[in-house]
Length: 236
Image 1 (cartoon, rainbow, N blue to C red):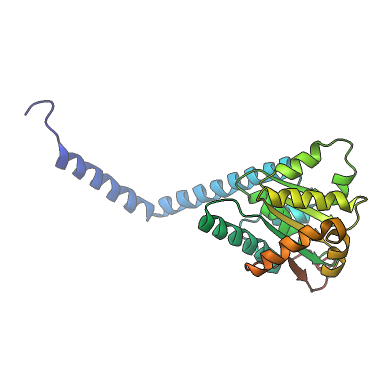
Image 2: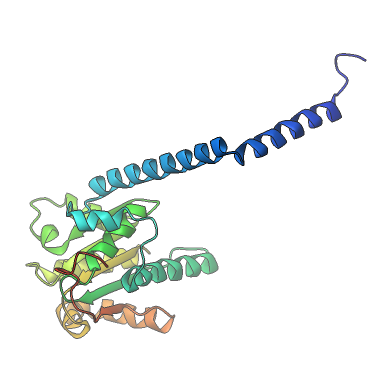
């Protein structure tokens, strides 16, 4: 047999026997322990990566917020509301072949989990993302924070309603809408109060966009109607 002649069946047999030995070893106590150890290491690595992203993307350092931000599969109505907005935008973009803007506002009393839900999506977003409060933006001494908020693939804009310049917030939301980006907000204001503050006069265009979004299947407002979780052991 020449050196160039293939050795197909012999190689296949070797690979097959090796795979059988690996599968058999995986069923042993030693193999199961190694698998569990590998899974723990993978989970720890993923948590470390998300923790670093939290810091880079502005997620609050509050212990409870970070705990939820690092949870790979958190449950709760506001987390579901965030997932729904993401899925809605992704489905429309796949259908249209272009960018589709989306804006969802989580409203409710302090302590109902809005910041936790916003922080989680910022920590897990696969592209450029940013968490910032409206007051922090409006207190900025330069335009750089505004540019970061405008250009991020995902913006989590929290604590709407206490900033000094609501008109600038409206301009930001409209700019992100025009660019086809996803914006998620948190506020203690009701839906009617939010509309009155940001969507009248110069903000009427934003109100019209959100009515169009509602007609296409995504409500702009999701209200947290339950009581605050604070002081109840910190659990959501």
